[in-house]
Length: 164
Image (cartoon, rainbow, N blue to C red):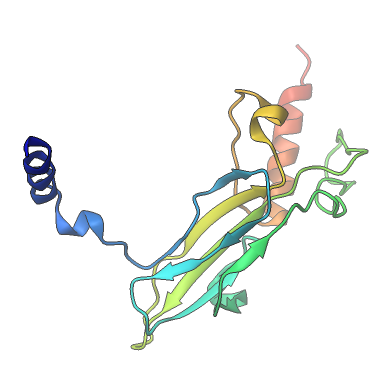
């Protein structure tokens, strides 16, 4: 009986707004997944149209219409399009093996009145055992377009190769 009363009291103390999601959100949290996953995009309004992208671009401009959950699989086998770009910096590391690639999913809801939700974003690395690959090292995922990525890579490269 005490457990029930305590649970009921806690439920009363949590504001209803804290329980409600707004806009769009994803069925799975960002992160590393060892096996293929299925992602569902959820929305606070069942009448809204949802648009999404898998490459981090703006879903308002470039999105696919969402109508059902989709599967994400390991992309390591794909070519190293961004990491093998040369001629961007004076000093540059170009990997010789395929690198881990993630999905940067962004989604937006377009409501019946024409208004838009905030854009939701999530990053998924599929087919990667995080602990085996990175151990306890922190992993940071940055979302940016490829031009900005090249600029950031050059800055970081120059900081790590300075002498003195």
